[in-house]
Structures are given as C-alpha cells and as structure tokens.
Length: 244
Image (cartoon, rainbow, N blue to C red; front, side, top):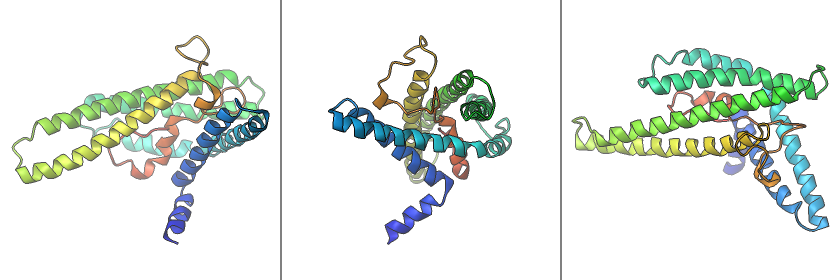
C-alpha cells in the first residue's frame, strides 16, 4: 500500500505526472522504433507504440500551454542572480532563463498552427523553439561544468575548517557533484536530440534513427529540456540548473 500511495501522490503533482508521461513516451519510442525494423507482426506493434509515443508527447505540448506564468515567476524571482556568488554562473543562468521564457510562446504558436487555430506555417516556429531549447541546454551544460569546477575547488581548499566539519561538508559537496554530473549528462543527451531536430545540414541534424530520438508531433514537435524549469520550481532553491 505504501508503494501505491507513493505512486498516487506522485501522479497528483505536475512534476510526477510529467515524468511518468515522459518515461512512457520514451519507452514506447525506443521499443516501437526497434520493433518496426522486425517482422511484419512486430512491425505493426511497433507502429502502434510509436503512435502512443506521439500522443503522449502531444499531451506534454498541450500541458505546456499553461507554463508561461510559472516560468515568468521563476525568472522574476531569479532576476539578475544577485544572490549568485559566481558571475559566470549568474549570467549563464540569466541568459538561459531568457531563452526558456521565449521558448514557450514560440512553441504555442507552432502548436496553434498545427491545430489549424491560426493559419501560418508552423515549421519556422518549431525550428525557432527547438533552437531556443538547444541554446538553453548548451547554457545549462556550461553552467553545470562551472558548478562542478567550483565544487571541486572547494574540496581542494578546506579554508582552515576543522577536520570534522570539513568531512561533513565534503560529503555534501560529493552529493552536489553527483547531482550536477547527472544534470550535465541529461543536458548533453537532450542537446544531441535538439540538434537532430534542427534543419538538415547543421551538425548531425536529421541523422538519428527513429528509435533513438523523441517523437515530435507533425513536423518538428519536440519536448523541451527547458520544460523542467517549470517542473523544478518546487526545488529551485538548490544550485542545479533545471533541465527540459
């Protein structure tokens, strides 16, 4: 019952529900892409799984229609990063917040165009939103690298602290480093995905096989890294950068 209660509690939150939808979407995409290359029977199952993945991604796109104000609230709260000690981390965060804020209206316009609510070509808006997503990921990657360097510098300079307090702080720093490494790896994986969805000719754009990438609705629909900005508003007091 405890496990069930934990699952229900997680699904009642936006963050938990989005993570489940994203996990299911990625799982269906991976398995479906693999099965489509097999026998005809398995290929049919694979196509259905890819269809489920596309619908789950579309669900996340629709839910993000309501994320602008939450992102704006975080951007205002962070401001110019006056509380940030490191100037490089501060400006990487400020620029990344700006890119994240612009991402949402661009995606909304693209979604509305695909839904025939407005009569414009959605392609350029999907490309613009993907470029902003990629920029945010790149800045987040650089930010994580700088944080890791700063944390490791702290480990090398005890600054006259007692051995007991330094051991305690060392454990906390080790946890922070592991967290940033995970964020860094997540950003790099999503950045590779974002570049794939840019126009052909840019780096490896369009070269990934279907099973390796996240499905986009219609032409270039993508699930953004920066969406995690909204999901992480609950835990934004920590130093790690939100990821999409």
